[in-house]
Image 1 (cartoon, rainbow, N blue to C red):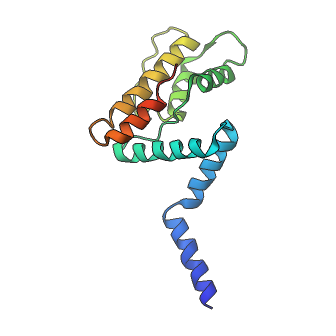
Image 2 (tube, rainbow, N blue to C red):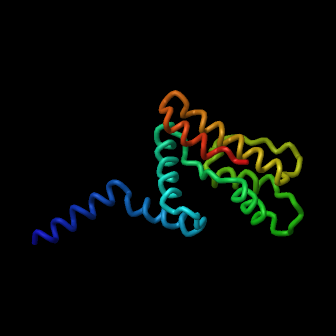
Image 3 (spheres, helix red, strand yellow):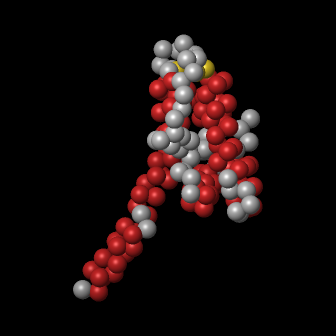
Length: 149
């Protein structure tokens, strides 16, 4: 009977703190990106989650330039070197860099890879700067992650 009680308590704890979802997310990200240093990658991912929580900003899916290019290329399936405004807006939402209620204006221009990279980097930098003054160590960690050159 005691084992069952402990199992129930453990299950309730995991559910209350959404640990199963967190572990699933971390595992998925690890398998998707397959970083050279998985432990360091997981630590940085957890740090970014903490920054998102501290700043109250939705967790952005911080990426380096190779990830940004890969995402753009997936959306540009025809290989024209451009994506639609709708694809652009959805990508920003997926990355946590645009809110549902943010009114992005379609200026009629096509979205090139350079424009996409510029906007993703700019928005990630803005989010990073929101942590400045709240937790300088977190800011420095995030700033290091956002040097995307």
